Length: 94
Image 1 (cartoon, rainbow, N blue to C red):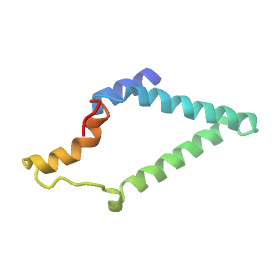
Image 2 (tube, rainbow, N blue to C red; image 1 turned 120 degrees about the horizontal axis):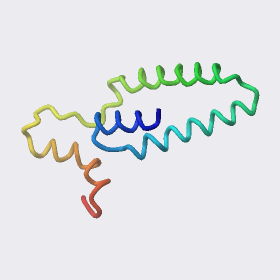
Image 3 (tube, rainbow, N blue to C red; image 1 turned 90 degrees about the vertical axis):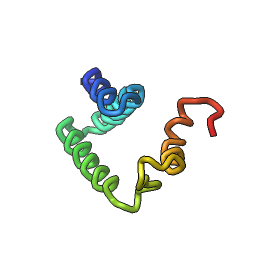
Image 4 (cartoon, helix red, strand yellow; image 1 turned 180 degrees about the vertical axis):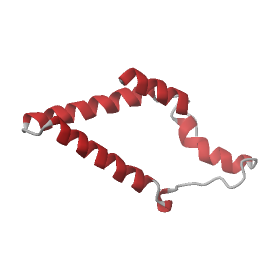
């Protein structure tokens, strides 16, 4: 399943497969703690599904948009929008 998640992440975004593995590892780590506390795996799964729905609803809110590019041909606005993404890949990029 982890390999499938990484492939889907690669196909969708072209990157961030390390994030997919790290995120899955954290979910499993927290699930282990919840099992040790006595929760049944189906309860944990239901909780993760509920959390996923709430996170998606939260992300779909308009107020979370930090920067919106109105015209993709405007070099300045596109440059500003991709600065964070490119900056994480290229050292000393400003």
